[in-house]
Length: 114
Image 1 (tube, rainbow, N blue to C red):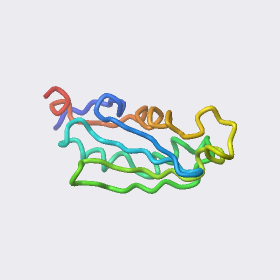
Image 2: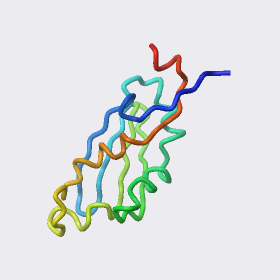
Image 3: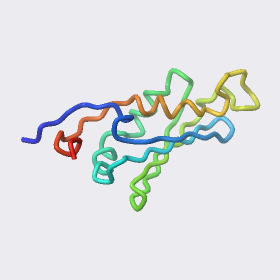
């Protein structure tokens, strides 16, 4: 049996955010490409939507980029109207990558010690 450990995504991956209207694009790239399939199993559209639902998000679409070992998440209706329609201090949604990186995943301990 593999010894699993729960870690926040920020311990094993990087993220950047951008906006397009009231949508936020969030990239997710594991530091170790071997983690890509494990993140694909656990960082689902449903989990990301749950993470952003309190901000009004209505849909999340995940685009898998296996040759880059990366993901792009498009989160709809999360920017309170977007940069031109919101008084939100983060109208571009740049800080939302930190929210994504707060999700936890379970990974094999031996992959994290390498």
